[in-house]
Image (cartoon, rainbow, N blue to C red; front, side):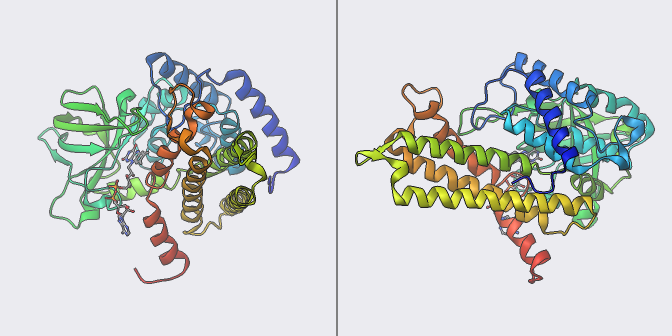
Amino acid sequence: MDYGMTPELEEFRREVREFVAMNAPDIAPRAGVRCAETAEELASLKEWTGKLYAAGYLGGDWPVEYGGQGGEHAVERSVVVGEEIARARASVLPGAANLIAHALFDFGTEEQRTKFLPGIRSGSEVWCQLFSEPGSGSDLASLRTRAVRSENGGFVVNGQKVWTTNGQWSDYGYMLARTDVDAPKHKGISAFIVDMKLPGVDVRPLREITGTSDFNEVFFDDVVLEPDALVGELNNGWYVANSSLSHERSGVAANAVRLRQGVGALKDLAGRLEQNGHPAVEDGYVQDRLGRLDASVAALSAMVYANVSRVSRKSERAFDAPMAKLLFSEIGVEMQRFALELCGEAGILVEGDAGALDGGRWQDEFMYARAFTIAGGSSEVMRNLIAERGLGMPR
Ligand SMILES: Cc1cc2nc3c(=O)[nH]c(=O)nc-3n(C[C@H](O)[C@H](O)[C@H](O)COP(=O)(O)OP(=O)(O)OC[C@H]3O[C@@H](n4cnc5c(N)ncnc54)[C@H](O)[C@@H]3O)c2cc1C
């Protein structure tokens, strides 16, 4: 389903595929694990990130003076890169590097750009996103972490963040904090850069249902920030954050590739499992479920390519990305539910359990699939956006 892929893009795809095969770190993929699990893995992910930037495969949409292709950059190229990395089941560093980079292009000072952008491009500095708090996720503007201005123009931060992906490995955090408690909630927030090694920053990894620690709680106890930690104007953080989030391509194209691989692996599994003396794949019910999944993934791919072509024509609609995100994450849950149904009792075993079917991936993927219905905006919030922006329904 390679809609809109011109011969030139297909040539680019071949080039990227070769690059990924030669350079991607040798980290065995584990279901539901996105972050490095050891310092060695982190080191190879950083090196890999640097290579992707150096080759122009990441950061293509950066301004030319900072190493990107600026207005010449074709969004389709980023999609191809994401798809090829997914196809190879290679890992990438999750985090907020691209978000803060765009915040700095649009709102930062020249000093901030000079200080932070080279570390992002080389992969040597890891960033996390310090936005969500307990009680402030979907309703982010209600956040309560305080940054109080001090006499030298700096700030003192107190509060707590949660769900901070990669926080345990991060050098810097891109943070939102309340700087005016009396202003309407969207108008009293500012954006900051936080050095994660500062005294008073306490990163506590959370253990997830799959046994891994991808995200963290982060506590701030009288953390002192210098005046140049502020990104953009004081109390303009809501605008800074939303503007940088608009540069975050949710990676749905890459996720569609992963879903397609999942359907293939399920067909394979159904061919190996026996039901009533026959391979399960010969059963009408199994064929129906597999067919529906296959068709849903094909529909998602079509939607993703249509969205990409709208982005490149600058005619993106406000409900395009929410529709694709909703479809992708809900298909994921559906697929993993069916996988466990197929596995039967064996489906309860997880990665690392002796005798687990397909190394236990199905149970781990089932448990992790729910995360995608929350991360980056929950399914309910996506439905609200589609209803309001797409269907014109009242709030
Ligand atoms: C894997 C993962 C990684 C993440 N990484 C980061 C990160 O690095 N940095 C960061 O800052 N955050 C991160 N998040 C946080 C993520 O942005 C929030 O979890 C998300 O915005 C939902 O917020 P919440 O968890 O507070 O849930 P809540 O907003 O409290 O939602 C609880 C429930 O209420 C529903 N709900 C809420 N509002 C509405 C509404 N208006 N209408 C209908 N239903 C509603 C939700 O759909 C959900 O079912 C991550 C989350 C996940 C799962």
